[in-house]
Image 1 (cartoon, rainbow, N blue to C red):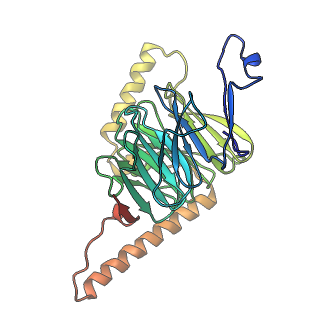
Image 2: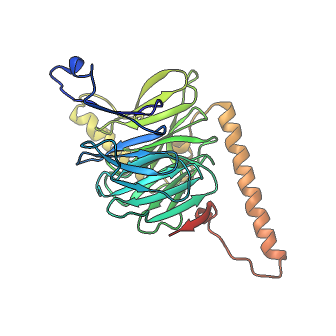
Image 3: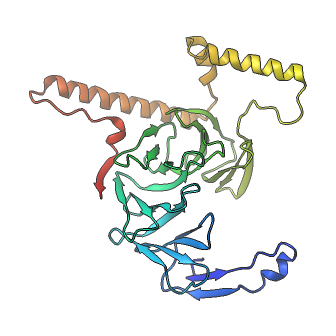
Length: 321
């Protein structure tokens, strides 16, 4: 699908891929411009995000959608099938909302509205009920389908809008790309990134992907370059001698054993960052400390008992069933 409103189907013949791409098998001119598309993992169906709804099409018949889901009249700019539970899908709308879809039903299951727009999301390939979304408020949110009222975890670290997120095939790590020209790598159970990548020439990171061997990260940025990074900066690529492998395992076990010691933790968490990002990180830390201090003082001097709202619930504006 493209911005000219055309939906085309092509034959994939790897023996003669040039000739089979000269003419599409079928082509349909749509009445509106599609915003996104995702193919079903195991069948000939695919999702298309439209200006008012999310539609399910079949490659057998492209002119009529099989199903249509909408919650209001907001455009859908991102939609993906669950890679494990193939009947489950999720869509992001322009009104800062997440829409959970069951392809066997005619209506969406649930909708959660956040305070700022969500740019992208990615399903966990090993835990089918977990997915992570990148937001305009500099944070990354991990959701659980089974308890969809508010995020399960809030990941902080970026100092500008997060534009893309992608999971590692292992399901234990994910990578994000941001408008602040950095790439951050995260553990699924941690709210802080364990590594950050940046270069002087790399500008706004638009797309990030993890390779299927979980060893490399691909990034696309606005300086018209595609870069290849190691998923773990200290990992050795290539053959390793047995003694060297045993030495690396010993060092890793020692780091894991003493990671909570103040001096060791300081060394492990230290990263060289650009001056602008370092200054912005300090500024955001001051702002969050000021908000916590203000809330604490309000509770002390207010006669009425104010309800305590956890941080992960503060970013949810509304919930719809």
